[in-house]
Each structure stands twice: as structure tokens, then as C-alpha cells.
Image (cartoon, rainbow, N blue to C red; front, side, top):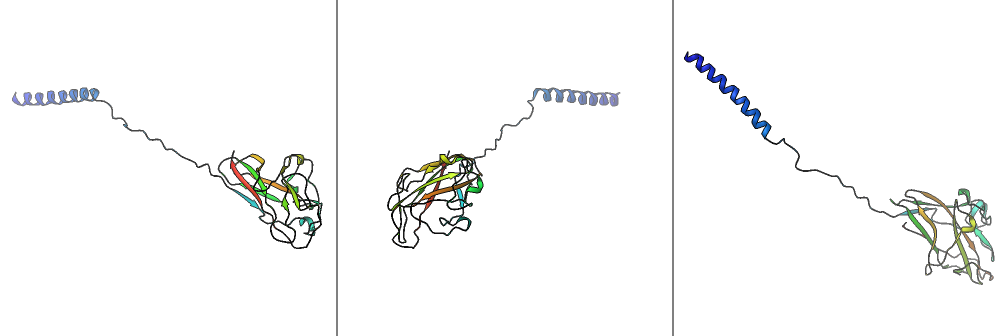
Length: 202
């Protein structure tokens, strides 16, 4: 009898423990995350451009002589230095390639400096008509109408916005027009001019 009661007591104890464990388990809150994580990425609005080539001689395209005459308009056109681009400019009529290496779309402005050195350094007339000792310059790009070319003024003047909203990592074929002075040359040594393209956020 004692043995049976002892066994029964142990059985009752085990059953009671299981019931209490179940009740306690139901009453306790389920384990859950107390924090949440978000991975945040920040991309800089990086602005940069490249241009190729970085040197150029006026009237050197398509076996051109590389020298300039007075009162003459020249183009950076692979088809010829005195060959005007088509009504709508195409890639093959532009000597330069600008690459927007920025992470955002940009606007391009340009200016062209007064000449330096040489026998006849022309100044930029900052207008459409060359003077006795000054030149006039324009920029154009592939895909636009040539009539829409923009005036390239000197660095001291308002920059010409010649391309708007150039997409990130996009190439643009570009050319320029250069009309020489009307006065006679006084010598035959070359002068240098700096064409500057500036990129800003669109």
C-alpha cells in the first residue's frame, strides 16, 4: 500500500507539474525583437566632367593647313575646318567628347578666353561680329539645331548655358565655331585661347 501510494503521489506530482508549466507558459509573453534596424545609404551629388581631346589647332581638321586667314569662320568639324555643321548637328561634325562623370544630371556652361602670346592674340569680342583685332566664338553640340548654337564669351562675362540636363555618365559630342579678326595679321606666330567648360548641378 505504501508503495502504491508513493507511486501515485509521484504520478500526481508529475501531472501537476506539467499542468502548471503549461499554464505558466501561456501566461508568459512570447519572446520578440526589441530593436529594428534600417540600413541607410547616402550618395553624394558628385559633379565632374572630362573632355577629349584637350588640345586643338584651328583649321587642322581633314588635312587642314593649321593656319588661319583673317575674316574667316572656322569650325571644329572633322569634315573640315571651314565646313559648317548640318542644320541639325550630328556626332561626326563635332571634334570633342564631353563625358558627364557625375552622379547626377548637370548643366554645362562655356567661355573662351582672350588670346595670349604670339604675334596676333585676338580678344574675345563677346558678341557675334569680330572686330579689327577680336574674334567671335560659338559652341554647339550633336542633336541640336546648328542655329541654336550659343555665344562663348570671355571669362569675365556671363557664361553661356549651352547644354542643360546632361544625364549622369552620359557622353556629349561638342564643337565650336571661331570667326577671326577683320584686321590684317602683323606676324605669323600662334596665340593660345582657353575654352573652359563648367558643369553645375541641374
